[in-house]
Length: 224
Image 1 (cartoon, helix red, strand yellow):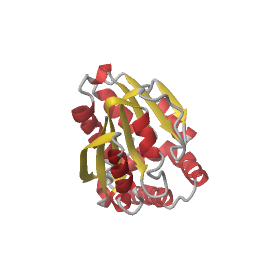
Image 2: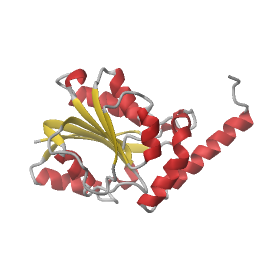
Image 3: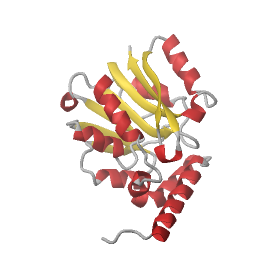
Image 4: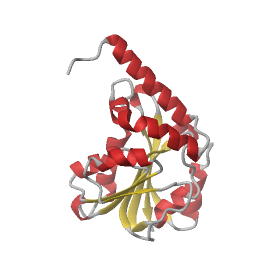
């Protein structure tokens, strides 16, 4: 394959910038679905290029292995919430995770994730609503790139992720730094702690879309 010319590379970068801007400006579920229907086929290439350097999926998978898979990846049941095209799932599978389910709003993104061959089950779900999963199903729940501008808010999503997690299981998620406090995520975590549902393992600021200088809070909650 021929390497892209500078003009081609610039055009590709401009397209991905446009999609990212549109994603963060989405104001409804319908807007998000329409955008990801167009973006799904090129999403992995665009967020993985040097202009984007979307490092959050790998960082979250590493954190999940460190903090959340004490029983071993191959023995854990995992939910990849807002799984998109499967970037986190692939990273977890490389650590020998075997039972990974995924949920996402976009059928087009799920279609790409299905091609990875690493998911046990993939289901369309709107995380702004209750998740159609049984209480206490998962040892680990990961959620990357979903708690960002124009996407999913803290309530009921964080509570739902905790609900479907087993006791002593963990929820590992990223929340874009600029919405952590203003959008109510910090307050919702404090509420869950006060209710005795979880304890906070870490609230660490990490690189998110490194090429943009974006940061996110890496939130790890253990269910009590």
